[in-house]
Length: 521
Image (cartoon, rainbow, N blue to C red):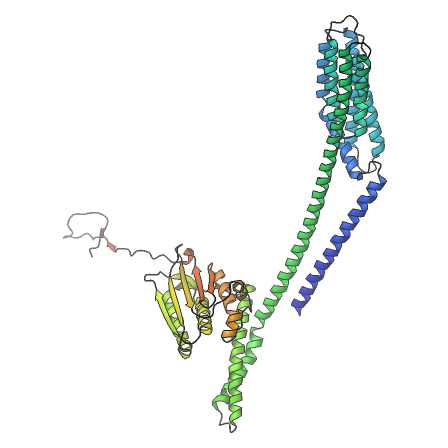
């Protein structure tokens, strides 16, 4: 009842979590669509903020780079232009740069809640426009009487300025045009004034450069938007994974609680189940053997024998269920001691030989000599070996053979192998027979049915000893069950110590040869 309750609760939890996940996905989709429809840029509102923030951080990162570039231009132009004129241009550039830098710092520190992105974008566009005018004023300086080829320096400088402003302003397309178009327009206007073809060519190249950098700026903007989308998807995926992990942990905890409750229930039912069964077995044996007097009706004696046989079968089943439940509940304590594995296996073979003889089976054994003792629970290992031998005898047809081997493993441990020539187990059914109440299809058809708990108990007891159970089988060739114990459970035999003695002083003791001598053998 408790198990069903936990199972139904876990199923309801999983269904509710699935529905909640679907509702969250629909809610996110609707919210995103509403934000895009209500936003003039056609993007999510958080993307607009992130792009503006990246714009501000980019401007802050160029705090010293822009003045350094302007100072280099001022120093070079000083050779052609007057000092007052170029210093005035440098001051205008610095003033526009500091104004934009101040707005970027204030935006970075402004709280997200209640921020007006449209107003901030307008401020950034206006600041870039002023900065573009300041850079463009380089083309408007009076350069009468300067040497030739100064226009080439202006052309190269303007291209670098346009490229620099494209990199700084690409996250706000409006600011990109506000910062670069005035510079390109001023250069084109100045170069179109003379009637020389070289100036026409440079003006045309300036317009082409403006188009190229505009396309490049849009590509950078698209890349940043894509990056933000990927990051948002990653964050949503992380949240969903965390929620799924929480649901999985909760479901696993409930399943473990249900399994533990089942195991505890069965483990505590040992006395309640065995007491009435012992009474049934005892009274049915008294009736079957006619201890208190003869039974006149022969059918009653047969019924008593059937009751006794059924009670023994039920008691064996209960014992196996309780053993497995105690192991799962952690209430199976190992009473470890030094055991001789070949002697224990040989003793189990003697116990099973009567059943094998009744079926016409032959049991052969082969043990390696000189095996040291194992540190293990004798009762548990005896149960393991008896289960393997019982399975081999049960599923081997009349006239078959069961072979038993014990010896060293390649890793320095010890093993016991039980092989039969029964019907075998299909490869896809081996995991099934290792589960509780699992049975192979061909084995069920060709032999008496069992409870399906023998091999799971063997596997559980071997795991408690740090060993393992390996099952190999081929159809119509037989089955091979191997249990292996790790090297850590093999007891190393210490070499015998030779006795020593200390000679005592006396009148006939002779010279002192040391503190002790080895005794001659």
